[in-house]
Image 1: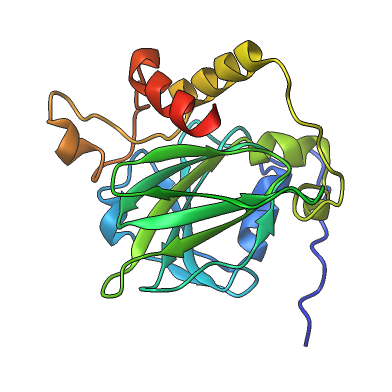
Image 2: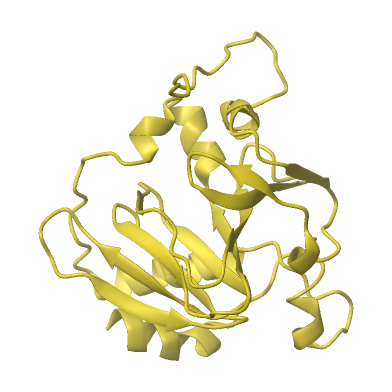
Length: 226
């Protein structure tokens, strides 16, 4: 039996956002609090619609603003194609794989590889898939977007997922670069805890914002986005 369409509740003076109701409707575990001890061992649950193991993370202070989610891809598997109307930052918690993106306008598919500690942006309005290139272990990805804000404005998830609207390409490269830098600097509540080495912090606790230096990501932007 097909799952009934999501219908947001409209409760006067409710402290919950539309995103909260949608998140709960997926049946996926929701991790709340001030931090996550270790993303690599976070308990996940089956998300039937996406056909993958996943968990939402809702840290204190992020309610109604930002969305964080962990996805696990089994060895040698690929996620279902998804089209998302918002930009999404993805951080590779563990593993090695491939992302493929394409648009509705008939343009050729583009793919790029990533590994543990990689961070990249999935542009809004494109279809995308994640593939695990390892044959012996799963991949874990951390996704970050402003989905709660969008759902507060438009209370229909189908407007944001698989919307047939074909977004025009952004022609101003300088403006696009500035936008990507801004997103990277505010994305992913993955903490550098105290003075711990980067290798330990990024794979472990979540609680503060990771600070990204523009000089560090400029070469990546130049290589992958032209």
